[in-house]
Length: 468
Ligand SMILES: C[S@@+](CC[C@H](N)C(=O)[O-])C[C@H]1O[C@@H](n2cnc3c(N)ncnc32)[C@H](O)[C@@H]1O
Image (cartoon, rainbow, N blue to C red; front, side, top):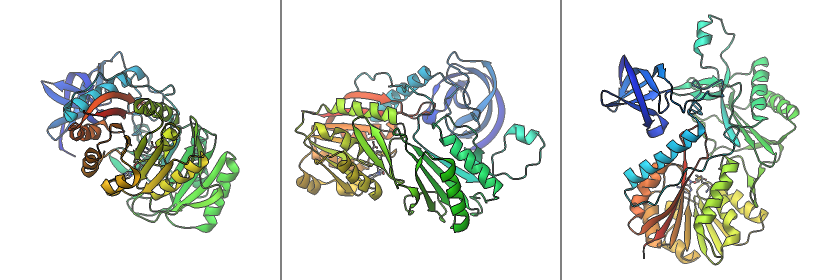
């Protein structure tokens, strides 16, 4: 939490954006992170605490707004933890994302870089996600207006997102601008029905209450997957609720549920139960169709994923006879996307359900030159694997936020593929890995892609070429 302080610092000029998307300024030469500000603002700051020697505060008074400041569209802005950059003009968001990539690659990567182009922006900056997870809670986050109203509330049940810094409180969401309908309608209808029926909402601290989570997936094909997560089985009410959802939303092609009696919300070790329709939905990404199961990772911004994959294809510059490895393949999306441009692709993924989907996706797209392996890349990828599958001409790697394990980087150096295309959702860990890969590789091309407008997140694609 850091050391508590409480004082006003006047006329702080916000000069940039730091790690995790926080606005940053200086007061008397000292750095301060300011919640609620955007670069170019001049603000009076309520300094609240010192964390790791850096002052942290929030806007107390907007002295002079930045030219890049815009009106946020969402009624929940500032309360909900998502879309924190909604008050920053989209062109400025892209500018700062590019700067962030340049900063970490230079500071952490410490290897020579080509010119970094502008971040590739999204055509749609609202309703761009195909998947959302909402949490149920009996501890609704109370807004200042609700507290000031003096009203007595009959209950404090809510469905929405965790309030940042208060893990047991949920911001009750009326309209979220991240996922197209019927997402909002599904969440709001279930909440109203559950309150009317007096179903209990989850209490994360006390570990009690029936309704726990709601997952909604809306595919570009028009198919909709809805998954309910219950803390315990209550067959009678579950059937009532699931029938109600099914009847209200004829668009749902896959209606499923989990029983999750664990302490954590992770669904990867849970058994999905099918209630209605099929236990997957279809997604279409350019020329490839994907079967997406309840536990599979699929890029959450479909329109931007297509742009991202096209850049991978462009960077890969395949001639048709290459042997390609696709590390961290998920449900085989990049592997299937590029399969018609090379001789063979071998994908590795630790999530077994996703690997099963990947196999189905290969069949669905009539691809005979793709093979998938389940397991941790660090254990599966080695010299023996390369002996079996042939040395790669190209490695595509798309690890999670933590980046690649050091053993994986060492194996890549040993395998010595002529080209590596590194897709990353965390340029800081990508930069760390690049520093090691820089021993043998040169960064030829870079392209940041904005998959998540109004957040600080940025995807970055890098083409590495083996030094001669
Ligand atoms: C960022 S996603 C990329 C998925 C895929 N390339 C795509 O574009 O949809 C990362 C994937 O890596 C998988 N993963 C995470 N850690 C892993 C590991 N150590 N070994 C293998 N797969 C892993 C996750 O399950 C996830 O599917």
